Amino acid sequence: MGETQATASAKKIAVIGAGAAGLISAKTMAQAGFAVTVFELGTHIGGLWDIDNDNGLGVAYRNLHINTDTYLTQLKDYPFPKGVKDYAHHSEMLEYLRGYARNFGVDKLIRFGSRVTKLTPLPEGGWDVEINNAETRRFQAVIVATGHLHQPRWPKLPGNFTGNYIHAASYRDPKPFIDERVCVIGFGNSALDIATDLAHVGARVVVSARTGAFIWPKYAFGYPLTRMAGRVHDLKFLPLRAKTWLSRTLNRIVVRMVWGRMSDYGIKLPDKKGHPISNQFFLSHLKYGRVVLKGGIKQIEGKTIRFDDGSSEEFDAVIAATGYTVEFPFLDPALLGNNDTVLPLYKRVVPPNLPGLYFVGYFNLDWASNPVYEQQAIWARNIELAICDLPSAKEMQDEVQARRRMIETQFHNAPRMNLEVEFGPYTHELKQAQRFRRDRSKSRAA
Figure 1 (cartoon, rainbow, N blue to C red):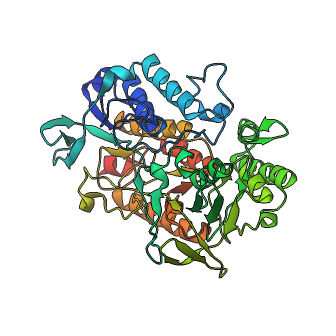
Figure 2 (figure 1 turned 30 degrees about the horizontal axis):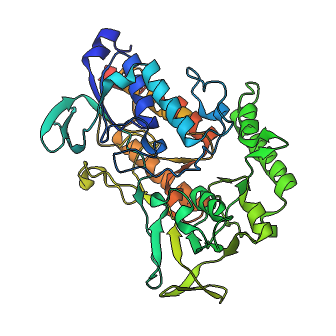
Figure 3 (figure 1 turned 180 degrees about the horizontal axis):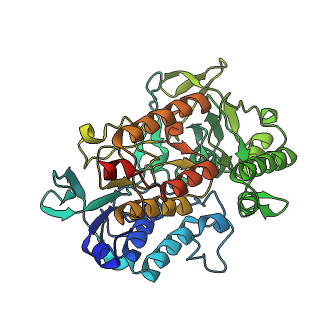
């Protein structure tokens, strides 16, 4: 038996962050009848998609587009408006989120200029939420949706670079690098986007990467490639495993037809699974020599960088596109026990020993994130409505450890892989969790 709407409305739910994950979580909870308050550090809706976000956490650049097309990225009850590009520009994504917030009344639930400075669990259940080191409010549950793409991870360089050294989080456009020699460190989506940005304006553009990745084109035969995978997953008659295999196989066949082998471009793939990268132009720039691919950096002296292949070059600038770490400054580290990107969360959402606390959006995915944010929020909603149960703390901890071992076994060794999930299997897990009920027969017999 679930709680009634009236009982739900008596519960107060705090959501931290007004980016995509926070807005989707707030809408999901509010529609269930909860009293929702969203705390947003800045004065804007949209999180990382707002290039001018005044919360100080923005990492968008002028040419940023979504990596999965609009068909996959949109939510079923709120489609993108007509005329939006197949791969929406960050400004279009921002307008989509603002429209979503207005359409579902989430914009009226947001307290702007509200930095959550402390979360404290209460012995009787619930959480105290301290705002701006001053006001404290009490909630029955808290959803953390501050994102994991705003705290830069700086690489450990073998020496000190004396030129212009920035993290990709600070990169906005190629203008400051016109006619400069630039080394981009990393091989993720941001690294390839930035290198592509610089390819026509830089005097020399080098990408330094110890490990490569499988690169998908945005389009194949004029059709968005990610949409092809989405159509496969729409086939209701196929079981999950078959859908996952078929979409992955089709993608690899199409990529081989369009690009050839990654090794043809000097890209060394990891021995284990990694995160797929999507870029329409990078490989062409490699072929034309506008971008040069190098291995790892062996030594830095002043502006001179020596690479693993023994070659040396001078650079005016280095851009570290080396990802992000995860921090929760409002939460006592001893409570969660997280270590960098290793988050001890049951199914990426629930900390086993902290009831009433949920984390939405802390994953890397081979798919669009918005629909998965929604599935995570639905699960949190169902737990709070008592529609479903959680396993015991020990069972959840055991699952967390099992997932950790699986990642170490199946994925290559990189910090971002600690957050990696695969769309089909992971959403199946979430849907099962949304229906999970403990066996109460033993407790009734006792």
